[in-house]
Length: 262
Image 1: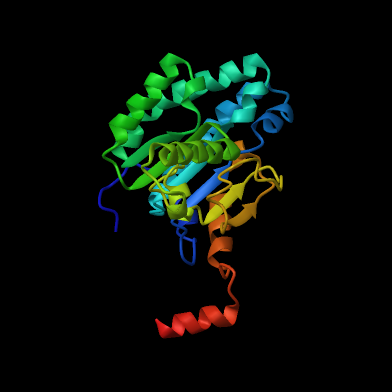
Image 2: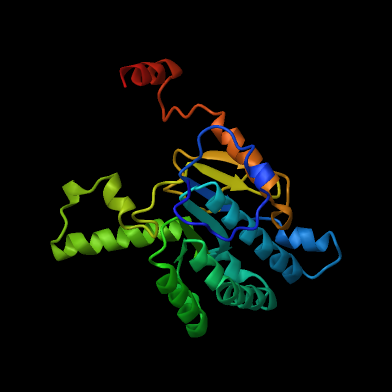
């Protein structure tokens, strides 16, 4: 049972058909906004606006299903190279989304965090991001990470530099470095690795998304463009995840033995 009664606008009939275990962390590469708009003779920014509606549906669906962590890939570090009018439109849309969804996220117990290079955001947008993070910090029903100005390689490089500085300062010994050390220096510190990564638009690429964290994630690709992504597509991805055997490098027989011992 949910600890509180969130104000969710979701297709409960569809979500109730989710079967099997739910992942503790879902990551989504939201792709296809521009192609969705082009196919309808609309400007690309219109696709991004419709994509924002899909974000709301997905966040509230995950909240309904009690999935504790959701990471959405909204804007990569490479996306800064897109036409300036599109970049400006996307940053404006992000700012509008933050202000429009603020109370909704608070009421629904969602904590929003941005992961990525904040130095490239405008001062006004950065204030809006940090304000929403502060306003939702006490929430814990769903941790929503929004990856903006994000790149997996850059994230790992930043972690390596931070670790190198600690070694130089004498606060860390090189021989003490392990996987946990690296994880603790990533943007996603204290968040479990994603168990399921969904990509829309039919593309089979990770696109520099959570490269370290996705080592053992299950992948689900749908041809659906992000603006059209809804409860049905999320359910299909979750049911696919629930039907898979996650072996983590072991054999099925070894997993069975471990299960029997427990």
